[in-house]
Image (spheres, rainbow, N blue to C red):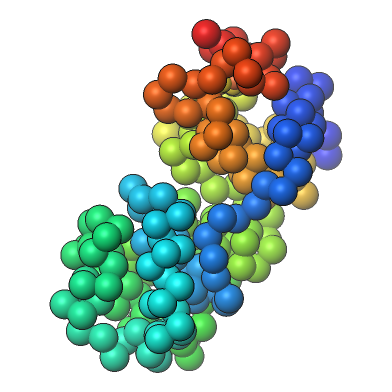
Length: 209
Ligand code: SF4
């Protein structure tokens, strides 16, 4: 796909004008830290994740360091983020696998990424686009909701939504579109009570209230 259709292109253009600084809101210094931050972001805000990772990454910046923590020690650090038991277990397991198989580095291909504990297709796409600058369009809860409300897709699963969006949007806009839809979902097209009257996409949206 070299050019999106006119309506999709207009939506992307308006969102880009509305959110000129749209980008990843998780703080990280390397692919490993983005991987850990993304695992921690499940059912949690990026603001809360950043508050915890600021000290976590200062003390334990790499897989070699984090693996020195016990499950209980890591749970106590990440407890404010919820789901701390599973997140700690996945982080420690993933870190050990990275050390055993990838010299402590994060692999840069989808198959290897989704084989890691706690890493699904969405997280893998976040890593591929934000850490490695590969074309990828991660579908999180905001991308899923906003793109369906805008009738950019009628997909019923995140993977189907990803396929629909990537089929109509040029590859060089996949990552940008991901961020734009997330920013719009967090700021205006919220899950509960979307602010339709103040939405810049009001005239283009079949779900406007
Ligand atoms: S008009 Fe309402 S439902 Fe449509 S994109 Fe804007 S906020 Fe979301």
